[in-house]
Image 1 (cartoon, rainbow, N blue to C red):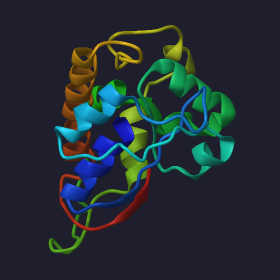
Image 2 (cartoon, helix red, strand yellow):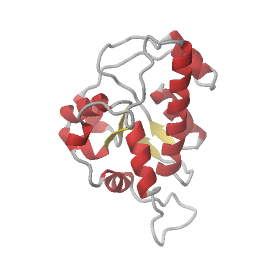
Image 3 (cartoon, rainbow, N blue to C red):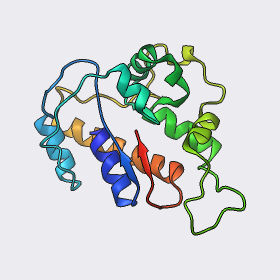
Image 4 (cartoon, rainbow, N blue to C red):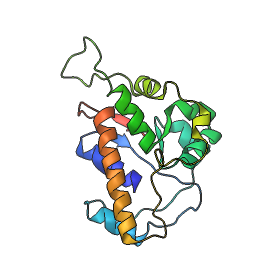
Length: 184
């Protein structure tokens, strides 16, 4: 759901980004019926989605790695330790980004241009003071609850939660809506 909702929100904002999802277990598994229905209500088609396993190459190629839970972030960082400063849970990223503020305009840049600080510079500000040990264990303040195997209502709550977090992320990471290409 996270991939589809982030892609949908970025596209609505006119931001050209490559958004991909990958997980820790199965490969080729379709989205659950409850997940498909929850996103269909939001105008997002999840019907063709198939799971993919996370690889070191995916982590290395991404400008930003977002997990729904700490275990996802730990796995990504275990595959590529150098990715730690740009790898967060969605909740952690939005919380920390909210504390440091949105990407800053580049001083003296043409106001009509896409003149925001580079994404990696903003992520460095967002990740300042983090330590890999911060990822130990589970934490409701960082993890999005996984609705797998639960009721339709649980999927609806999860979709609403992710949708709200994605909205916050896009507002902070892309405060000026301009076409630009990114990989997440």
